[in-house]
Image (cartoon, rainbow, N blue to C red):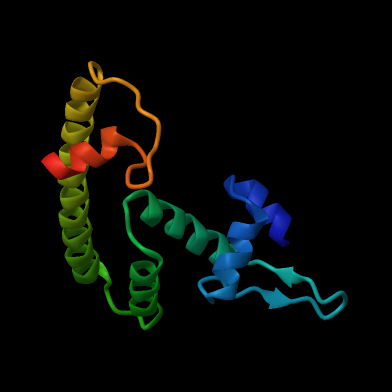
Length: 136
């Protein structure tokens, strides 16, 4: 199976297949007759795994670590549990940051609704933002 066929089969772009090939997550054989990369069933399985792991928030580095353990016939399950705990913590932190950002945005919308428009001066670009930052 070639790059385009694999990409179409799994619903990804050819660039996605090439990326994972470049970082050696996929290891296709080169055809002796035409030099094209030929992807095996193992490559299909690995890419399916990668796509599932990415949907769960695992990073490319995480995935490479998991695959390296699996390639050595070691159970990656303890690593997967540790990494998902880290990714969950990271996601919760980003979520809280987004909630705080939303609160600041709501506050800005409320505050700016009654303020007049002003032209920039030599020291001020947009008084709405500059006054808001100064008050925060």
